[in-house]
Length: 241
Image 1: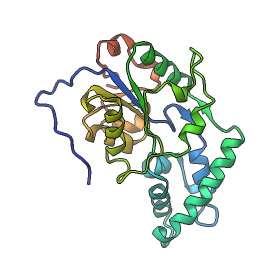
Image 2: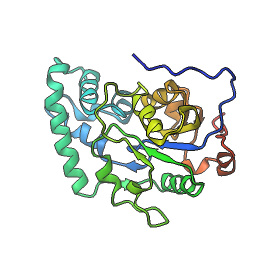
Image 3: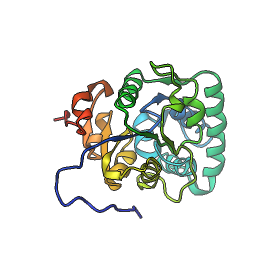
């Protein structure tokens, strides 16, 4: 069951002054999707595991939950029972891809992180992935600071009772920033992540049109489209209409 935060009495959202960033698909183009797909060999046709399936069923979920969801989406019998082995195979494949250099940062995301950092806002990084920190460490911002070190709070890979679309991960991030949830925006690329942000009473910033169905507050095709003047004033302007 989702942890529901009380809705503000007014339709006007309080001013924003903190940011929470997902990793895979937002900050980094990681090989997670590729690893999930390639690990399906022996369970189902890997070619049937499309990006749409990954985004809708797996992205943003804890590893075992993602494994169950992927196998069920592929119509694999006894998905629950076979999920642990599939998750283990996927993790081994992912580690090999990471070691092979199959991780890159999104330049627009790094520019937004740098801009929010320049505003002096506290930021958190929040991902269900236990591989997120290793992937962020070698990435440098314009200022020369490691992407891993620029965040005031890091809740990546925590073992929590609930995965997305439950807001537990994002509420934990806000708590560790010591900022009320309604003052945080969440940058996400997956519907489950946007649903989690909204359930936590946060502003959802999505960088993919897929998030329109998840009712993201602001939808952009590039994080460079975020109006930094508006953001500095504590607002995120809708530009998806």
